[in-house]
Length: 304
Image 1: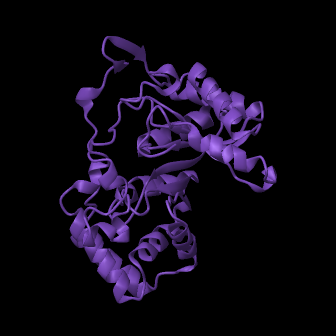
Image 2: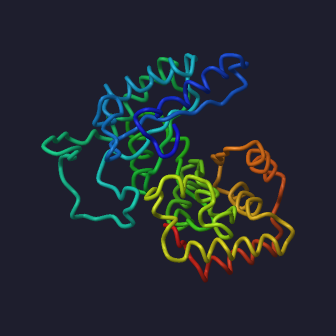
C-alpha cells in the first residue's frame, strides 16, 4: 500500500505486483502480504472498522490472492495487534487504556479477538495451502511471546517473523525484542531503514526537499522530534568521513544486523533503488561500527 495509506489507493500495490507476478516463475518468488488489524482511523478498510477476527482475515486473504493473481502467499502477517498497545504517536504503554472490549469508533464496541482465535484462522489458511508461513507486524515483545506460547500450547503455526521499524535513529527493539527473536527463532523484517529519508541526509541540506515528509505535513511525527536532525547529520558526517554515502551507511548497518532476516526498502527513482540494493555489498568496518555505537550512546533513539 502507498504510504501514507488512503481509501483510494490502499490495494493498488497488490494489484501492480500481481500483474508483474503473473509473468514470473511463482516458485522462485517469496511473496509477503498483510491483513490489517484495528489500526485507529482506518475505518475504510474492509468496510471498517478492521479487526483480526475470522471473517476479516478470510476476507482479506481472498482479496489479496485475487489482486496478486496467485493461489498462495508465502508469508502472511497480522498488521497491528488486536489489543491495547501504543500506536503511532504513542511511546509508552498506558494501562489506563486497558479495557475488556476494544472501542473502534464512537458508540461502537467489539470484544478483542484472542490470539488463539487469530492463530486458529491462520492455521486454516495454512492447511488449505493459501498461506505457507505466518508473521506479525508492529508487535511488542509480550505479543510475540504470547503468539509463540499459544502456538506451542495448541499446535498452531509458529510465528516466522515480525515486521517492525528499525534504523539508526530508532533502535528501541534492541532492548527487549532482540532477545525474544533470538530465543524463539523469529526473524525481523526491518522497515523504514532510512527513517523516511532522514538518514539519506537530503533534509539536512534542504528541509523542503521533495519527499513524503514535506508532501504530507503532519505525517510520521516520530521523525520530527527534537534530536532527529542532529542525529541524522552526525551519521551523515560519519558516512562521508569513511567514503560512504549516508544511505549506504544506514542501509548496511540494518542489512547486516544479526537479528535482521530481511529489510523492506522503498524507492521513488531508479537511482534510489540501485543505491538501496547495492548497499547490500557494503560491509561496515569494526571502526565504523564502533563510531556508530558512540553516536548511539550520545544521541540514543531520537525517533522512538
